[in-house]
Length: 455
Image 1 (tube, helix red, strand yellow):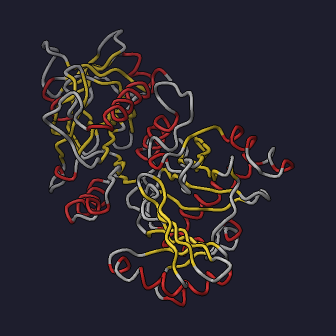
Image 2 (cartoon, rainbow, N blue to C red):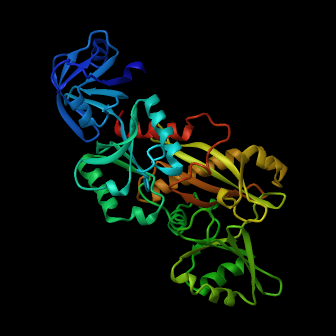
Image 3 (tube, rainbow, N blue to C red):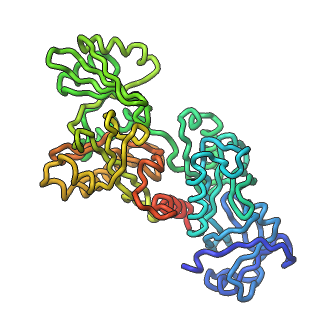
């Protein structure tokens, strides 16, 4: 493992020409790199013809300031090393680019606001695993093989001109940003011209997910009845079969805009709306009157109808589960974590932004009203469902995802249901408790990036 990565230092002294690389003899021998040869150095989209010079017993690689500027690593780095004799190419990397929504250049200590700590965690994890990461915004998107990105090195956070990365992790948090023509053109050019792998490349919406998964007979057992609300007939049909129906904004998040509709004994309808300070109830004399009240909203919001479920609860507070499923170092889907989320005392959604609380699955299940005979198998059922659904997304939706936040529910009889799938999972809602500084979710992202880049 030691020789699979190497410390790269920028040599300020004179060890040769700008195009020379000084490499320890042991590394050269291990990787079968011929000393004194002329090779192609590759780092992301950067290419340069270099001379390999003996570094004796050194355990480092020394490069000139000119090469370092081309690579964008003026402060040095620890990188994985790979030599392909057939093409005489020495590859260093992987070079990972993380696309974030915005930056704050006027705050050099916190250039990404609230997610700066997450970005620093990625930097630290890359240093430990032998990778290099930089961060860029949609404003950096443009023609050419280089991007203006943020790096963190001995000089702290600063901007640098960087090659197109081996891998782009799309962490944009707004569809409007993602759909910008400059961003879409960047993705297209990065993939076609530079061979860059882009993952989490698009948002998912609720209708797209349920429509795609419903075509897989092995997954229908997880799917509550669900359809796009396009007419009163749609609402009337599902309400006739289920006493409670949820209306969820197709492109909503954090529990915003969800409406719970319950039919009462006298055929009146109780609509419960999510609000920042709790819930708001409103009665309608009929389902038709409730539907007519939506006419204004439906001009700007598309709703997914979903069968109401009788979820397990703790003291009348509904419990659901967030599974973080990621691709691992071999490209296979694997469970990183599953946490239970219990709704706040005056909410019917469990999102942390709505007062929900996190706990371990075993703790929540143990305290819940789940039939006792099903409690022991609850975690394994959730894991199986999350993996099945992730593979279904991969097979049925034409896009590249490296991680998915899968929201699951369980009824009191132990059946697992899918609530929704998020292709940009929050790093708050899915973090296991009592984590170390570098979380498994971050390590896994780097390992998958290394796999994609061929390291």
